[in-house]
Image 1 (tube, rainbow, N blue to C red):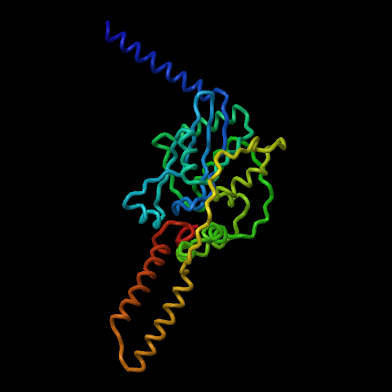
Image 2 (cartoon, rainbow, N blue to C red):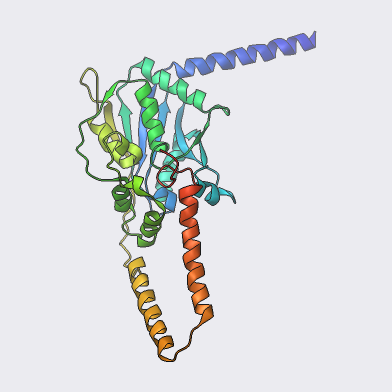
Amino acid sequence: MKKKECRFCSSLYLFVLFFLCIADVNAETQVSILTSTPSPAAVYTLWGHTAIRVKTDSTDNVYNYGVFMFDEGFVYKFVKGETDYWVEHEPYASARSIAVYKNVYLYEQVLNLTEEQAVGIARALLENEKHENRFYRYNYFYDNCATRVRDIVERYSNIAYPPIQNTTTYRDEIHSLVSENPWLSFGIDLCLGSKADEIVDGRALMFLPCKMMQIFDEARLENGENIVKEKKKLVVPIMYDAVETVAITPSVVAWMLFFLILAYTLMQLRVNSSNVIFDCVMFIAYGLLGTLIAFLVFVSEHPCTSLFTS
């Protein structure tokens, strides 16, 4: 008899839990887009970040499509274009604490959605977070934390974006964010191919979180109302005095190497001798650089580096 009672209690508990989950999703649901401005804390925070917030009467969660595991093989997989990111939720308080730690602005755009649309997005996020659905192949231009949020909002609302006469390329947009880091800019230019020099149209421009925020500010629904019902500034960074640093840029290093190699070569010609070790070091360095570029062109799956992806 006790076993039957235990089974009955377990079934009743599961039923109540299921009912509460359904009731929670169908409670008054508010969906917002959260945008963090760029941060110099790490390379992957230089572009900013986009997440989606779902708030009900009893829950307040932020869904983040930018979760990844920085393990031993991450760099190789990232360069090869086989980096899988996933979606994961966290309490809003935790997401806000991260923005405070990074010392960045955190903006919230409350979306002008019906209850049916908001619940649809909330349910879709829950479905996406299931283990069998949560992973996706990350791409820094075409499929990232910002574009995933944009796509799921578009799925449940008809959005008309403002016309944008944009003349910049993907490379231009990236340069504007790394202008204070010339070595990173040099590395990006070295790795990215000609596809990075394509003009970015209005919708594609939303691969950058802050650009997406600006476009959503002016986007409208079918009835002419703004998609953004309210915009809030949730976190304001503490401003520090800029520290002036003398940076040795790639151009300076290149010219220094040029004159050093030229002077050394002229000296060797004058004494009619050669240094095999010097030549080996120089050509090995060139060879390694060429190997990296060949790997990106012929092996990597990144659309903006590979020769075989469109």
